[in-house]
Image (cartoon, rainbow, N blue to C red; front, side):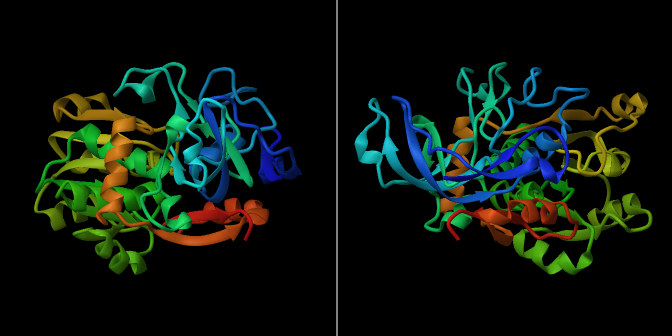
Length: 346
């Protein structure tokens, strides 16, 4: 089968197309023919070594075992099942829960042995992938491409909203609102939890699209005196921030939060390191949350909300699998509106 492999830490040249054997499912696994695999920051940062320093980088301290096929947002069809798996699953269209863990229910995502598909396991930049049958869920939508965009970014966004306990009528600021996680944060905060959303984007040409997703106000991070504009449109400080940007908007986020406000981050596309005046933190009673992925029960709740139409896929562009390099380069461009999806076999 065709598969892209990351051969080591570095630039896009480290992502190489290869012919590899189709994997064989073990007793409790299934073989999934990949029909769509959405791109996330995670696989790019994994290749670039952004999760560590020195010679090792990855979800785990030992780093990534190369070569590794990336890709964690996967939708496809089960075409073969291991001996301990119900053979009736063959032919079922599924999305993949993106990691394994021995953690107790509700704590799976913070278990020490949490292992991520596309980092610790070969992922979806390929024509086939093997995965535990118990971690394959019914596709929430009838379309593979649309169903593939939720597993990682959707679970991350859903967990962020639950983590800070978004309440109806509260005001939530969403940074990077036109991206994969950001566009889902806008929808989940507004349509599922009933919050007012201030969406922060780069290009105000996206304003109408953001409002269609549920944003009450749309502002550009390029605005002069952005903090004042945020408080002006809200009529005062805001309740919480859902952030994927990091340093570039960190000080503004703390500035506009009310006393006892909440700041939750799951990304750092605008800078991985920042300065924090601890006086701001304790004088305003601000709570900081770090967030990544979520629990199996949150995944189920998210899929149910998708199937009910409360959360809709936001897709910017698709690429055939053979153009994975171009897709990753395009992914890093600013101004996208939603997810980038690879389509094996197209």
